[in-house]
Structure formats: C-alpha cells, structure tokens
Image (cartoon, rainbow, N blue to C red; front, side, top):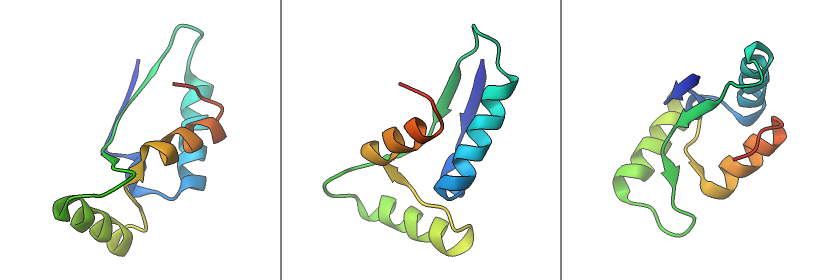
Length: 81
C-alpha cells in the first residue's frame, strides 16, 4: 500500500503525473495507492477552501483540485478509481 496524503496538491499536474508514474513503477500487482487530498467543490467553495487554494498557488505553484480534475489527473497517469 502506498499512502499519499497532502502531497499531490502541492504540484502542477505534469509533476503529479510523474510522481504517480514513479510510484506505479515501484508497485507490484497487488499494490494500491491511497490518495488523501481535499476535493474542491465543482460548484461553490467555502472561503476557507478558497484561501487554502490561493496559498498553494502563491507559495508552491500547486492547486486544490475538483473531483473532475482528480479524475483527469489520475487518468493521465494511467490510474483508475
């Protein structure tokens, strides 16, 4: 089991895909990846969530992602939910 908590939101998508592919290369056929990240609303977000997103963008060039964005990112890395 590989557990990634609050890691991927700190990076842009291309770096996330690279990190996920490197993790996948170390996995065996019975391994799984658990990704523990905030999922932003596709509709309206709280002011706290918006503040976290702005902080990530300004300090680390990362972003919080919506469910659709997470699905697209994982698909880009060759993973499925």
